[in-house]
Length: 258
Image (cartoon, rainbow, N blue to C red; front, side, top):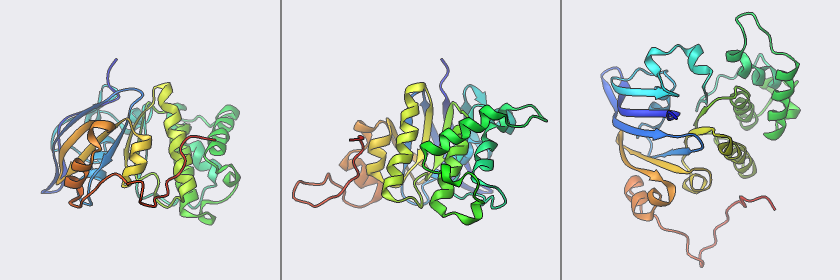
C-alpha cells in the first residue's frame, strides 16, 4: 500500500527566500504526524506545500501516490482535506452550508448534496459540538466555533489524508481535547493526519509520530516516544524542557473518557 503522504528532499519558500530545505518523511494509513518547531521554522510552509498551495523549488511531494504539482486541486480534494491556520470567514454561509461544502469533490459538476450528505454533515457537526450552528450565519459565531465548523467540513469530505494547521487555535481546553479526540478516533479507520501544533502535551496525546522543524530543516522524526524527549525539545525551542515532577502543580485535561 502506498503511503498517504511522501516527501522526498522537499525544498520550498517564497520568491527568492528559501524556507524548507531537504525535508523527507512518509506518513502511512493510521498514523498521526505532528509538526513542532519554533516560530518561523517552516511549519505552515510545509503544509501549504503538501496541499499544493505553494510550489516546491526542489524535491517531491506525493499524496496517496499522486505527485502534488501534477495533480489538479479537484483531484487532490478527493483524497486530502485541510483546515488552514487562517480561515476565510465565509460569513455569508450557515454552519451546515459550510460543512456540506466538504461533499463538493465527490459530486458531479452540477450535482447538489443529497439527504444522506446533509445527514452525514449533521452527524459530524454533532460530534464536534457545533450542530446548534447548522442554521446560524458564521458571522454570528465565535472564532473557536467557526474553526470547529471548518473541521467538520474537512471530515465530511471523507479524506484519506487530513492536514491541520494549528487546529486547536481559539479553542478552550475542553474543545481542544474533544476536537483532537474526534480526529484520533478516525486513525483506526486508516485516516492519516498531518497536524501543526504548538502544545507539546497535546502532541503527546494525539500523535503517533512527530517531525521537529528548525530553521527549515528536519532535526528529528519518528514515533513520539522516541522524538519528544527533554533533550530534543530543549534543543528545538532553545529553552530548558523537562517532564513535570510530582512536586509541581500541573493541570492537564483527562484524555480518556470517564
